[in-house]
Image 1 (cartoon, rainbow, N blue to C red):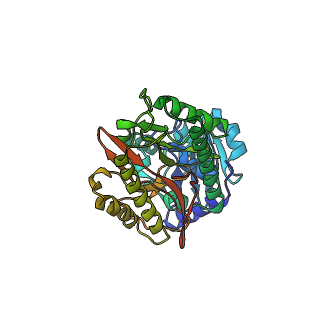
Image 2 (cartoon, one colour):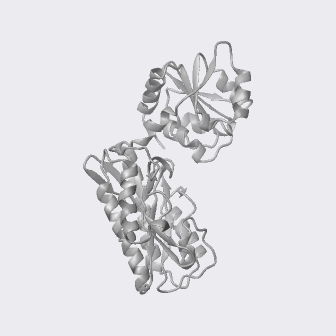
Image 3 (cartoon, helix red, strand yellow):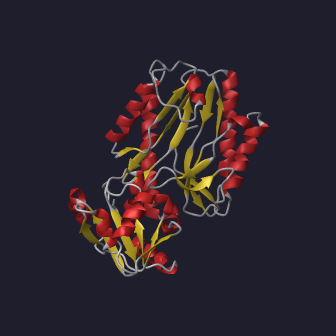
Amino acid sequence: MSVPESRAERLAAAVAEAGLESVIVGDLVRPGDSGRDQMADIAWLTGFGGSSGLAVIGPEVRGFVTDFRYTAMAAETVPDSFEVVDATADMLAAVAGLLSGRVGIVAAKTSLETHRKLGEKLGEGVELVAGEDLLTDLRRVKDEAEIEAIAAASALTDEVYAWIEERGLAGRTERDVALAAEQRMRELGAEDPAFPSIVATGANGALPHATPGDRVIEAGEYVTIDMGAILDGYCSDCTRTLVEGEPDPAHRQVYDLVLAAQTAALDAIRAGARGRAVDAVAREVITEGGHGERFGHGLGHGVGVEVHEPPRLSMRSDDTLLAGDVVTVEPGIYLPGEFGVRIEDLVVVTDDGYRNLSSRPK
């Protein structure tokens, strides 16, 4: 994906403010061969889409280190202000050659083994400093281009939902629906699913992260589908609980309770609201309905180049919502051995409320 030069400039300014000469950006747990989630910081900062890359950035240095497989890709995608370094022989040695003074690393993204190996390659006067993740705040609030990219990924997901409903559910297995949905995403232009799609019917719906299996979907049975797409580097996330035919009236009461909780939580979304407080709004509705102990997960999470990122909406959240946050709102009720209901929208936080990116009926 194409990224603005201003991202590197903002990070360099944050590095200077932290009293550092530079920071290392990227996966220092498995440098040289990382998965998509481990490359999220690199993708956001540079637009690089490969699996091997580290960046060094500060007021006086901008270096991008990769190996032979990706030097051509880096030359085409990484902003011109970065020096692209071919590190096929030794990635950590190439990174060390770009460092001077106090260098920030993120402890949660650095293994002890990599820290030791990198330390052995440092020149005189270079100090590795474990500090805060400076990219967290920079990545969290989305600019207009990012919001529109997420909106496009969400619209694609909504189109897949419409396609699923048109094809029907009864008589098909969970696995068949999940595989077909992910194939349809790709046909519509998605790079990949944002996460393994969840299709859960009957008692499997009581498992929040159920794996689609050979269970056949029956008419009148609730089916929880949770899926998202990656489009132009950004993720979407949406859940609908569907039924073909008439549901059991008792099940419908649970569905209506979850919908009431989600509606109340959405009404509480706005810049300045506490993540814990918004979660409490939904939790109170479900508790008053007699199912408080069956809503065991947080209300929502941020979405961007990763499908799970700050801020959090949960009982333990210390986050305050900011205009430009993109978050899920997804209460649920799960009755073991019976069924489950979850409804999830993806919304952009605004000063006076929210913009809903999920358009499918509930």
